[in-house]
Amino acid sequence: MAWIQIHLTTDRESVPLVELLLENLDTLSVTMEDAADQPLLEPAPDEAPLWDRIRITGLFPEDSNPELLSKEIRSGLPSTTQLQLEVERLADQVWERVWMDDFHPMRFGQRLWIAPEGQNPDNPTAIVVQLDPGLAFGTGTHPTTALCLNWLDQAELEGKSVIDFGCGSGILSVAALLLGAGKVTAIDYDPQALQATADNAEKNQAGENLTIQDSRQPLTTVADITLANILAATLVELEPLFATYTRSGGDIILSGILEEQASSVIEAFSDNFQIEPPVIRDGWVLLHGLRH
Ligand SMILES: C[S@@+](CC[C@H](N)C(=O)[O-])C[C@H]1O[C@@H](n2cnc3c(N)ncnc32)[C@H](O)[C@@H]1O
Image 1 (cartoon, rainbow, N blue to C red):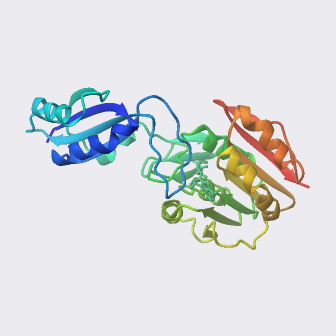
Image 2 (cartoon, rainbow, N blue to C red):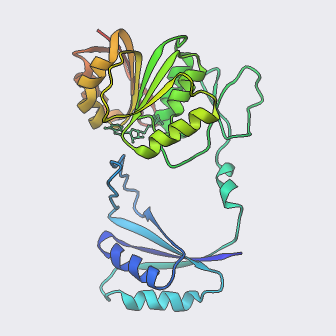
Image 3 (cartoon, helix red, strand yellow):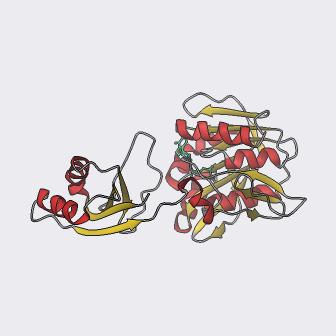
């Protein structure tokens, strides 16, 4: 079966009305995307902020009349509404597998690979995290995750305890466990992330030494290594907590930091940590430090 998509680019204020019009026309789904490259980084789980310019897509069955639908939408909006309208015919595909065209095994450092389920790299010494893209952040395609995976690959993890704060998909927790960490505590405030971490750990048979915890629960553990790939402002806010989580002489790995934010994060951590010069990838930074 094929489909018809109607793409409507407009401003934030018009979204509720456009959405209502699409629903009244029995759209099968409504999708919203950024229309002007305006990143909205890391909204909290209960927030759903919108971009200033938005591309709203309504999906309709193939036998719909796109001219009629377009006319109905235009006539339902005030004449002053700025609206760009495009119609697209969409051929049917095996949607569950389409993402695989863009997601292949990826290597981080010497030994560590992230691979979609069933696509093992042709390398007998590879340490492979099996992971399919899902709702929680963390597939290895973002530079901040890649920086953390590269760090884990070269680190001496055997038997070490690790805290993965902001675990997302659990990618760093599972990688640390497969690379030899003795115990990992994965923490997040998003229930979807906690679930994804549990699922990915199970898929990789890495659940035995993993504790998964909501960040609102108190943590009494002190770890050899604390990892946190969040945003700069959150890292700065959480510095006192990370100082209590990391044993004296232990490692801290911070990412999610834009290059121009690195100095402010280093400053915020310098009382309790000796931070090394930044490692940079595509404008994003990883900071490694040792707890005083
Ligand atoms: C950028 S993702 C990182 C995911 C994964 N660790 C990785 O490296 O790809 C950041 C994660 O931190 C979580 N997070 C952000 N702020 C947080 C906070 N204040 N407390 C707990 N988790 C937080 C988000 O829910 C998200 O899953």
